[in-house]
Image 1 (tube, one colour):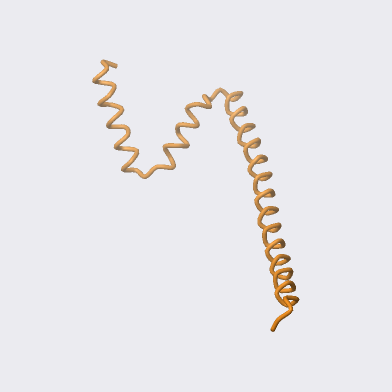
Image 2 (cartoon, one colour):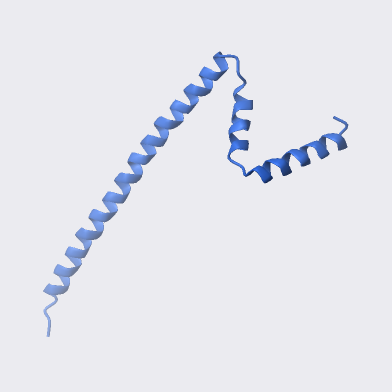
Amino acid sequence: MSDGSNDTQDNAQWGNIAADRLRSIIERIERLEEERKALGSDIKDIYAESKSAGFDPKVIRKLISIRKLEPAEVEEQETLLDVYRRALGM
């Protein structure tokens, strides 16, 4: 018959391992959140630079979103945009 001390030690050891793992995960997420914040600030600065150089940041954002798409998706969107413009008499 066990007095429960082994169970307590096992739980304590498991708790330490789990706590260390959890702490590691949280710290990694926090570092990445800081990096994302810094990158967001850098991107904002580049858009400001583009505006001061005479470019339209809205159009640049649109171009970036288009470049993320597959060519077939771009073609489909452009076709639909054209159809919708014609329907509105634009």
